[in-house]
Amino acid sequence: MLRSRKIPFVAAATVALPLALAACGNGGSGGSDDQTLTIWHYENDDSAMGQAWARAIEIFEEENPDVEVVVEKQTFEQIQKNAKIVLTGDDVPDVMEYNKGNATAGQLAAQGLLTPLTDAAEERGWTDKLSGSLQTTATYDEQGLMGSGEWYGVPNYGEFVGVYYNKEMFAEHGLEVPTTLEEFETVMQTFVDAGITPLAEAGAEYPMGQLWYELVLANADREFVDRYQLFDGEVDFHGPEMTAATETLDEWIKASYVADDSAALTAEDMGVSFINGTYPMMVSGSWWFGRVVEEMDADWGQFNFPGNTLQVGSSGNLWVVPANADSPDLAEEFIDITLRPEVQDVLAEKGGLPVAGDASVISDERTKELTENFQAILDEDGLAFYPDWPVPGYYDVVVSQLQSLINQSKTPDEVLDGLQTPYEEGKADLLDS
Image (cartoon, rainbow, N blue to C red; front, side, top):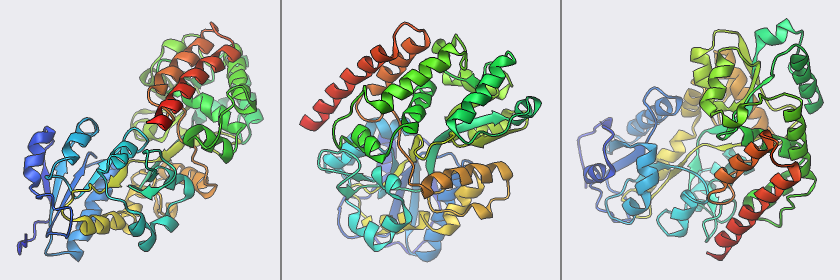
């Protein structure tokens, strides 16, 4: 399908997937490339990722003047809900942004709906650019479990959980950024002694689970992470890692390091209360960065969870190539461009946490601090994923069990029992499937 007219950028409005499919018109040969590259992604134009992908498209067009680039803007929910149905047909995109993990990219890979990218990863140097913990979400085995097997996706940016802090409140109480867990506890006790609850938290959604997992990681190594996340061995829920974490969190709750009503609070409640200065610290993800920049009046900063080599976080979403794509070679070329310095530096400047970027190009001090903190984790190969990732439905289990801890209706030992059974049942289901 040769086209002599170059169309620099065709951006379709967000529409329901069946309509977007009709616009692709690739024919689904799944073989040799035609002269169209169809891209699906769900990033806003003004986001760090949206601006970076736009730059990648510009570079691709400059280097491929005879190729028409068609961009179909979807939403995360549309692609998440309909990907399996869409990719079994012939009218598919050539390259698509998709969620990472066993239940998403892994499921599509196990069903033969994605193109293996292992050869491209080796030939194009992606295996060298991306650290081991970043590669984990890119590779899936025959059962669709992440961490081994073929490459089926390529991440371009990252995300992680750290500590946001109110510099003015720290200065008022003569406090410095803690570098160990003991120093962190001293900081929190200083605030409690002054009548201030130190941590903005939320037990009704993800934040408390991420704080708990940071404490697990404070007592863990990569071998434990592989057992828990990748099923590489048995997990002892009453072993030193989880026991120490759960007992420590229980002590923090009793010491009033988190608010008594935090079991009922949402992530939004947590973020707003930190931004408005009610609490001096918030342990949460890099996805809050832009909002804190826009809305917080007080001076603030961000540091990695003190003392941890392993941190809660992962790659961002993946670029995947559908098995029925018309232009797989062009898709691989586009993916490769998104890892080039010119594109990664756009991510860096806009706070998008590049996986292969250079923090020295960043002019904004807060964005530079965030990116350097992330790079420090990558330098240690320290991304350890999220506590709810291992098995389907585990998010609700983690939230419920930790709410019980906040409410003091369960002991740490009982909470660990409540976490263990659903995990083991879910693991058995996945391994038997």
